Length: 305
Image (cartoon, rainbow, N blue to C red; front, side, top):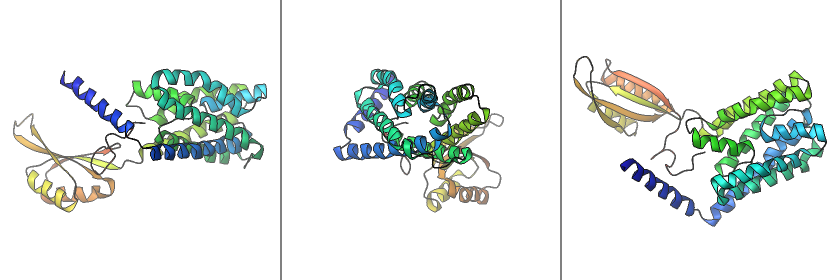
């Protein structure tokens, strides 16, 4: 019962956080979405589409259908997104979907607008690397502004609700792989499909980097006979918080205080040195902490992408 009440309170705080967004913040979001939509269109129109690289998702499907029907890629992107946006409206509501509709329309418009100026390069490797990188930067900016570019972005957001432990880039990698495989059959060119797969890989890796950053911190679990001395030095010299947890040895039955703390990656060697100096016999576990919320890190009320 308590867990349910806590969840409801957290939801109410998140709702108040969203409602507290000012008009200025929304204008900034839409400006960011516009710029990101243009960047995404540049990746498609100037690098990927002219080199027949179908990088998965609605974009990849649109490039394939463009070759089959002759209808502009940007137009196909808009047409395919219409039913998906309908599902998104039902699941996420009008506030979310309006910004996504805007992003989808802008992306489609800019894609058709920029198409006559491509390709920038006819080298498929360069096109794959640059196009994938630009797509990742654009998607990251759009997601951070609280929207998506439509298509599989909405599908991935739905999957994130069901499987929150999976990262966005990994989900894109799975859904896009099927479409890349289909492009090999349609274009009857395995090399082109492999380059398209490279676009997906670059996009996936860079998108996770844009959204989550590198392993920004290390989590320490320290079991020592001198916990107070170690915790004191961590607080004083590294200016990091620490938490005591009660523990006992399974074999010895001896009660011990376990120190748990999170330190920024660049301070990790110093923290290790503090432990070694104070207790060379300490039992130390260090693991990566990829997402941290709280003082000194991300806000707990920031939107989960």
